[in-house]
Image (cartoon, rainbow, N blue to C red; front, side, top):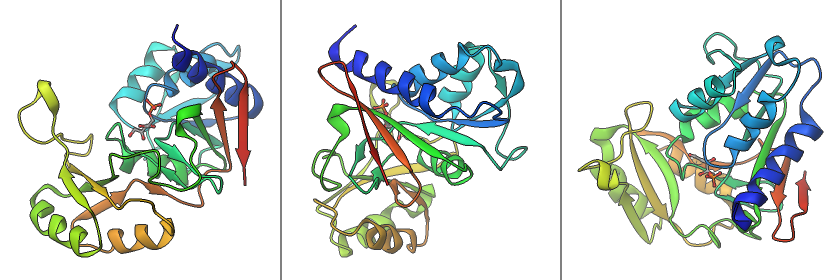
Length: 234
Ligand SMILES: O=C(CO)[C@H](O)[C@H](O)COP(=O)(O)O
């Protein structure tokens, strides 16, 4: 296992061991490569038949099933005891950039529905200010036919580059989210005031959600290069 992969696993295992409520009934499971180890650890719990897991998208639904966990939906269970998810960048106030894996709307829905939201990441995600480490831009989920207008609007708000995310080798054309939307990555450089930037972007017609998460995470676990796990809390 590579250093980064080991760091992800250590962070995820410790996050579950430290935080999983003994009598949890509803648990949110996020998306990405670090959460794979969260689902693995939760799947090792002896009482895994006593709670229901709520996914943030297609990948996490599969993780829940593959680890023998009970699956539910956020429509059925909208008050979660806890949720775990990865992040693309984390600052010391636990402001986050998320959406690198294109799941941000459902990730935010699950995160804000949980009494406690726990972030799991490796050491590369730590940053003193959002936008310093994650250079790809702020992921923004949008209604497809609004992308031309929103591209112009984002530039007016100060975006340096605005890119409609493409599906890559597997798909000619833009990526389609789990909610059948498009995704834009807008680079605003270093984001000194994430709440204000989120509010400005969110007010544009056609924006479903932004990948700026503020005031939602209460603790973040980071797997370090030396094999230890560090924590930031607010
Ligand atoms: O926001 C996300 C998906 O939209 C992921 O949580 C984020 O990209 C982190 O992923 P990874 O754990 O693979 O680094």
